[in-house]
Image (cartoon, rainbow, N blue to C red; front, side, top):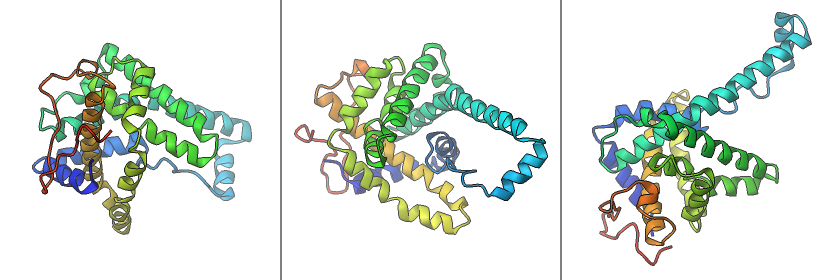
Length: 259
């Protein structure tokens, strides 16, 4: 079974000599994955701000039209550009975790049928997350972890159907959701330190977090192949691809009885 310590140790190794490139990719991923990307910015504005905006735009009707237009444009940008940037960023970190060439990750995500498959699957993932979030907070959080690996799966094979990518993510995360939640919590201290550094410090934590998540995906991917949930061909992988990386204690991250 994987451990937080093993994943983080491997993440640090991956970032050696690659940190600054990973830093910029991490900023892109933070913006479009909603982690540290200021997803709640603008919320809870005061009435004085509203009145100022209303005076600026002349009347309520004009203000509402402009506000709706901005929201629609933001959603379209997220769908048409953001989804592919997120998947391309995930591909970068997965390639980095494997010591492979990281060039062309963004171009791959915008290429023809890859692009269409990414938009379809990511949109459905977001739609499902939205529906589950309507059923109270806890079910929404649980399902968000079930669908957590969809961008990574698409980074391997964007031509999987949306249902195939989501189903495979659910199977990968089965039995790992709570451990992944605890893994996320383990970075909380780093983010709090970053906030003390005028928020800017959080940007320097992103590469470490995303590299760790990439190593987690590689472990879960090996689990899925070993457990018969998918094949090498399903994820565009060569038969020589494997992930039996070891930690300091020499124990494999993945064992065939750890499903």
